[in-house]
Length: 52
Ligand SMILES: [Zn+2]
Image: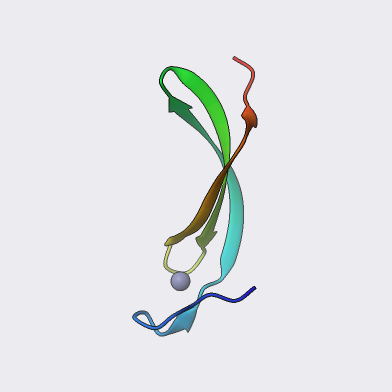
């Protein structure tokens, strides 16, 4: 999958990282895909709930 950003004029270098977030006091894990070049978040999807 390619995501070209016309404004920045480059093809996003997709990097997938897992981050720990918190929503309503509940910790959860998110798989975040961002561009390693411009750091723009391309997509985010929640994973299973993290163990406390
Ligand atoms: Zn980019």
